[in-house]
Length: 175
Image (cartoon, rainbow, N blue to C red; front, side, top):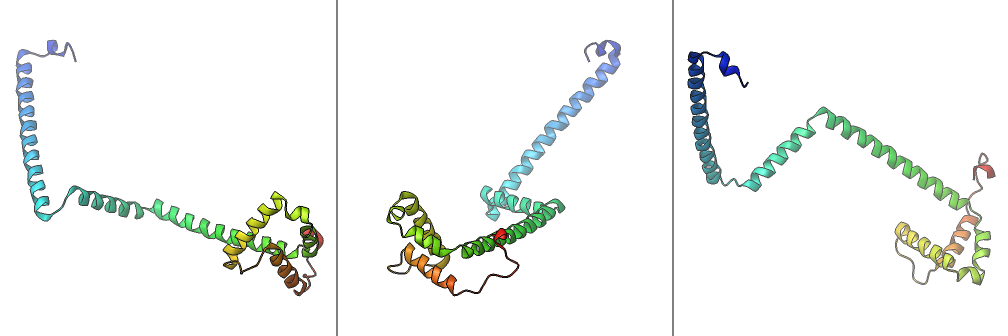
């Protein structure tokens, strides 16, 4: 742009200076009009009791409404919902399999091992016993008075002794 004034005639330069002054004046006028409008807006909001926090809440609510109306949000929401349902079903299935496997364990051999005093007093056993009791209290409610891990195992052993025989298609390999 430097050097372009050399190619313009004196008349063209004067015309451009006039246009520049006119545009600057229009910008000044528009700035004053905008300031007056903003002042009027603030007065209306004050009269209506609208404050900045309320405006922010409204803007956020409107923004969220706009986001939830988009097809991308709807597709993502639907996909996540389906994924959640599938994950829930998978966790339920895993829980059922674990429960079944635990029921299939030979309780008598576990009772024999637990009856050994050295093992019962070991830190590993105490930790395991504590975790099982915590799990039992979460799943089955509160622990009955006087019930300890040994009693739980005994009652489980008695209950499993009275259950039906395993299904024919279930083999030792599937355990």
